[in-house]
Amino acid sequence: ATILSLKGVSKSYKGQNGGVTQVLDGIDLDVEEGEFIAILGFSGAGKTTLISSIAGLIEPDAGDILLHGKQIDGPDKDRGLVFQSYSLFPWLTVEKNVALAVDAVHKDRSKQDRAALVKQKIELVGLGHAMDRKPAQLSGGMRQRVSVARALAMEPEILLLDEPLSALDALTRSKLQDEIERIRKEEKRTIILVTNDVDEALLLADRVAILTPAPAATIGRIFDVDVPR
Ligand code: ADP
Ligand code: ADP
Picture 1: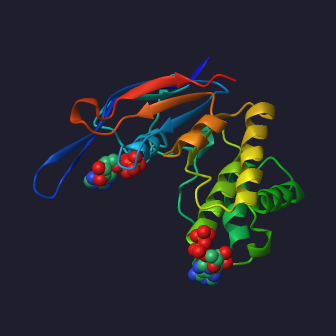
Picture 2: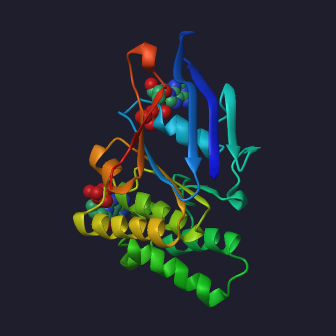
């Protein structure tokens, strides 16, 4: 069944000198339950605009974004859309940043289970040694990994990932790849991944949608490719 549906989604930004940049131009995209789709595009193609719209962080100028057939209305973690790229709280440790989200979405689980889940996902992204550090004491890549750990720990219905494997060392990268594969196979979770890395898209996804950059005539269009397995 279709879990997420984009119909005619368009978005332009106004420039400083009154010009308008059309970034998304009538995007139509259906995502099936349990599907892993990668949205591939060069820098500036509109990937962040598209995934932020799906996350409810940006309101498109036109078109509909439907989750289970209902129009989304702002960010809504309870309905299962979790975007990894939310920022971290600077005054909280790595552990507390992940725990805060886990405690909010997994109220039904025991305290021990929640703590174990937090620890497991932080270790998975290779930050077991940095649980007690605050974001300012981390590199950019490490902060990115904390946000990936937090998103995975929330176990949302649709996981929205923005270049989760960039800025990772080879070992952590391969561990995280395995985890994403496991989530796809065992948990049958729907995943939307945004990337400019062709290898990453082909390696992980069932389907790759290519968001084309300039020339202007094709800006913001999507081409769909199934990945043979
Ligand atoms: P990508 O994630 O593929 O690199 P973005 O969605 O970030 O692409 O950006 C697409 C285009 O929209 C770029 O040309 C960028 O400069 C422009 N853009 C993005 N956000 C804004 C904004 N808030 N205001 C004006 N222009 C923007
Ligand atoms: P990355 O590829 O993770 O972005 P960097 O080159 O930014 O790596 O950082 C390399 C190492 O330096 C990191 O593993 C981290 O431990 C340390 N580091 C970077 N920035 C900071 C900081 N602001 N405070 C403490 N340690 C830092």
